[in-house]
Length: 316
Length: 292
Image 1 (cartoon, each protein chain N blue to C red):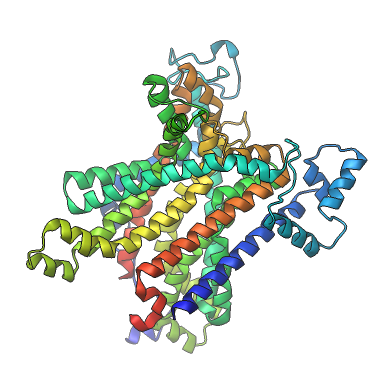
Image 2: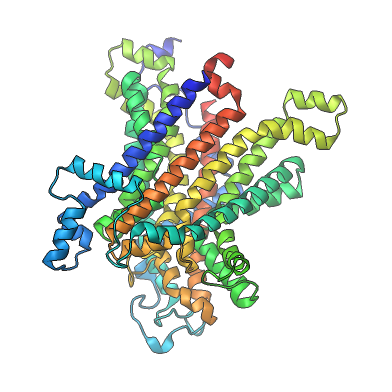
């Protein structure tokens, strides 16, 4: 039974990736004008360059053949050439991947530690802790990442001078310093939902009969929380954490622009502004693949943690 | 039982206590949120008319001057009155999310009801397509649309509608399936009512509380995403007044020590989104309670 679930999930993964790549490739044809104008971004190019573009993108061949060539190239790491930077798209992506990756990881850490932590705190200590967590999450859920960015810059960079406001930093240590405010800005709105789901899940588990039984048997609180409550509450918590972290990938573009970081997202936005379609397609493909992969991993993790899912309705 | 035989419009769950019940269940937070939303909506309509000064006229000699005289919030980076720009910007900041919500709801409800009504292979196909659509985060689709069709509110709004549609469809499909298995649907079918009329006259109206709750919460998301797209320069274009654009335009001022214009626009966005979130949650709770 487990294998069927796995196989079905993997099939869905491949289907999602294929359709997504098809849509990203097809965007070339959705653009007004013909593909040549879209690729050149409306610039006038000499005839020789036009011939090179035609050849590289196989524009004389049928649509599906072109899609196949593009996909094949992409799978081999060749994502085309940026019109504006005159560089290989894959080279540019490789250079900027670490900034975005680092930012997303840093934000994910903050979300997991602060979000899950405050959710558990709110669930197990009703009263002022609970109310303050609820109010804080209600506010932070409504603050868009770029608004959080400018507030953080105003308070922590300009007024207090604790963190730099812009740029990437040079060494590992200064990288971390430069990424701190962006990571907080990125994590802030996702913190809210993780904290709330954690709180709801832990509260529900704490009311269950097996927990009441454990309490009546005199099991100490620490062990109770860890082995009886959190183990079961981990399932919805993992799911929502995974989904939120996956969504960080797209919002990272906004935060990178706000803090002038040279990440993938910022480059995507610049390319969209200058209509450098090859770059937009390349980076979109990378980001969508990452998003779909993380979601698939979360699903598989969920199936691993909760045997009832893989076994199907029989077990319920 | 006999009431089910004669069925003009089968409404199993009547609205609890009408307007009075609505006000009571909303609570203080809900009422304040509703008031904030009402103010924002009114401003969206008459904003440009009530602005005390011209929101579009630059006057570089007054750039970054703080609150003074009749200018409650000071001037922005081009010497325009910040308060007037905020009031005028309410229009484009609220219309975009409205379009997104209408688009996503129309598409999502249609697909959800269709899938729930027909079930079988059509349901599987629609569910599979929706699952695939989940692969596109909203902002990414909006950036892609801007790269292909050029920057602007229309392209971004359409892209976001498409990105939000699967969330609506998933929630509503579950509710529609539940409605479909109610006895009154079988009674209507026996009486010869067509599928379309049952869906349009009975199933969808009975899902209305859930649809409205979903729409309210979605307005908040759409506002955040559209403001982000405008902040990136891919949505509403400067010098048009828009809260997202104002933040991006005035961001350099923060480093120079003039944070007020950007912060003021940010606060407007946050207040409206909080209001929609709170109201949406209350409506959701009410919809859940009604379904039990």
